[in-house]
Length: 218
Image 1 (cartoon, rainbow, N blue to C red):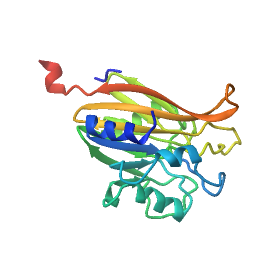
Image 2: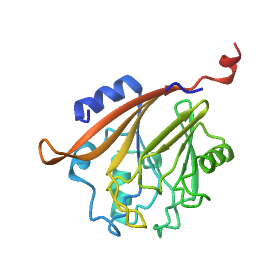
Image 3: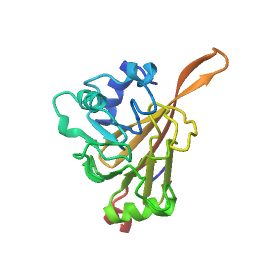
Image 4: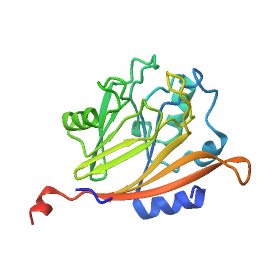
């Protein structure tokens, strides 16, 4: 069952407290629908702080692929990218399962699902992959769904790229701090602040723990 700042010193404290820092992002769509990552996000995402990168796809360029791999210094094997509907890279798998801490995590872009982004479709994929956490993209809308032994994450579009129908989106990504069977998630969004008349990064936090079946029986 699951019970449900953005500065460099903050990231250092996060790693010390929770062990493994995981960057979850996707739908970059560079250069197809956006020219670059938001500067406010690039300031936060510095090499050497993040241990794992999980990308839902639609990277769309070799330069952004390399950027993601450079974030994890010395261990590019911890960078996992799946194929989006706009990706030409044939090396990207459609689906992937990785284990971080006490969690099996499934990764898929999500355009393959019918109906797309429907909770039941996502739960069916979660059961198929036999994972604790399922991460998908495609909608460009960040979302976290937790219910009993089901935890679904959509990081949205890190660039705020419009959807294929032209709908706008808020730039967002997620950091997960994982230690054993515990996860703390931090959702970063770039929103317009009417008080300052500027774009501002907002952060929201949630946490959950996995209870092993054996412990649940006790």
